[in-house]
Image 1 (spheres, helix red, strand yellow):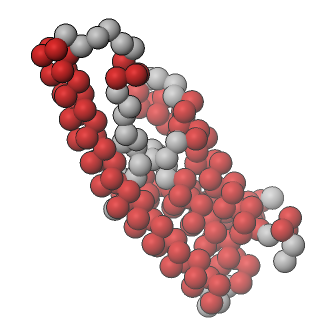
Image 2 (cartoon, rainbow, N blue to C red):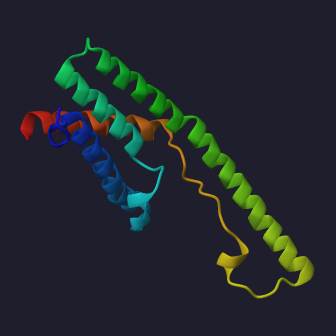
Amino acid sequence: MELLTNFPLWASLAAIFFAQFVKVPIQYIATRKIDWSLLTSTGGMPSSHSAAVTALATGVALQTGLDSAVFAVAAVFAIITMFDASGVRRQAGEQAIVLNQLVADFGRFAQEAKGWQAKPEKEKQKELKELLGHKPIEVFFGGLTGVLLTLFLHYFL
């Protein structure tokens, strides 16, 4: 199959871009703040990882059937990816929150105890990335996004 006609590949890439783009208006609805950094960020609603792997598995299923070995590989890959997004990576994000709080507390203590030199805040503290993983609902909607977008692309384009 040629690269330009590889439907599962293009469906997966479309799902990634769609999920990343839709994070901005969803975040705006939730917080009334526009955050364009979400376009290139991990985490958030919906999970672009989940959208990509479910789009891939759905595209493979549409092309090769549910009984193919390739679909089995894509489905297991999707399950592992979604499990990781909501499990290990989510816990890493939770730990980053605690570590960032410790760094902030230490910074305040040092400032009060020693009369911290006047420095820009960005030089004093580099925060760890807290938005690494996904809540189960974000993974669910990411997966749903991938399936629905792929079905739309397959049947209407």
